[in-house]
Length: 362
Ligand SMILES: O=C(O)CCC(=O)C(=O)O
Ligand SMILES: [Fe+2]
View 1 (tube, rainbow, N blue to C red):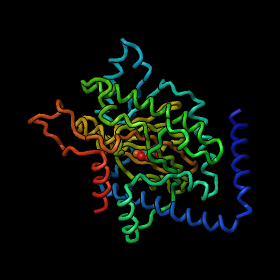
View 2: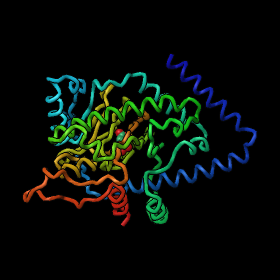
View 3: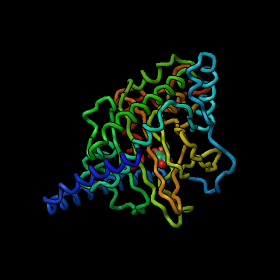
View 4: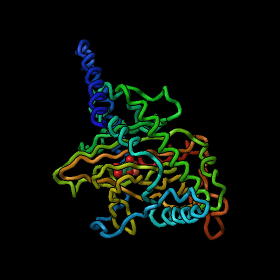
C-alpha cells in the first residue's frame, strides 16, 4: 500500500515534470538560476554552521555505552504518573539537553507518509524544488552580509542535501506548497502532530520549573509556526572523519527530530561525543537556546553534530519550535538571585536571533 502510494506520487511528479518539457530551454535556464541561488543560500547557511565549529570541539573518540535518556510520554497522561514523567524530563534537560521520546502518540503512518513525500520532493527538478524551499532562516540583512563574506570563506564539501522551511504554520493550509502534487496533506498532518508533541513537552518543562503549564507557550507568543530542516547525508568513503553537519547548538525553543535508522547524530557530554542511536519510533528532542535562556542555563542547549555513513544515505527531519519575534527572552525571576545572576541581558526574540547570527559573522 505504502509502495503503491509512493508510485502514484512519483508518477504525478514525473508527469508534472514532463509537462514542463515544452518550455524546456527557458525552464532549464530559470532552473539553473534558481539552483545557483539556492546553492548560494545553502552554502551561506553552511558557512554559518562552520562558524559554529570555531567553538573548540574535543577530538576524543566516541564515548561508548552512554545513551541519552528515554522518556515515555504516555506517562504525562496519568494523574499519578505525570509528576514522575515531569521529573524525568527535568533531569534529562539538565543532564543531557537531549532525550528520546517514545509513546508520543504520533501514528507510524503519519511519519511514513512524510518520509515518502520528502522522497518525492528530493527528486523533483531544481526549479520545482526552489519554489517549495522558502529559504534560509536568516534575517535578510544577515543573508546579505553573509553572501558578501562568503567569497573570502573556504568552500565546504557537498556532503549533504538540505531542504528548509521557515515559519511554517501547519494551520495555514493554503500556504503550504502542494508541488509536488500531494505534498500538502501529509505535511499538514505531520507538522501539526510534531508541534503538538512539542507543546506538550513545553507544558511539562514549564511545570518542571515550578511554573503553570502554559508558561513557556505563552512566553513564546503561542507561536503556531515552526522551522524545519530536512537533511540527506550522502554516503562518503571517509565517513569517520567527515561531518555532515558541523557542531552547533540549536537556537530555537525546542527541537523535535526524526532520524532514519542509520546512526550519525552525536551529542556532546562531558567533553565527549555520544552517539544518539536510532530508536525505532522515537522522536529525539533537544533543548534550544530559548529554554536555556529562560532557565539561566539550568537546562542546556547542547552542542551536537551529524556524521556521515560510509555505505548508507542517512536522513533526518528536524522541527524547530520558535518564539514570536516580539517574545521577551529572559530568565525566570525565581531562577536568578545574587548568587546566580542573569547570564544575558533580556531582549526580544527578534533581537536575540539577529545578534546570534551577526556575532558569528564578526
Ligand atoms: O541530522 C541530524 O541528526 C541533526 C540535525 C540538526 O541538528 C539540525 O538540523 O539542527
Ligand atoms: Fe541541530
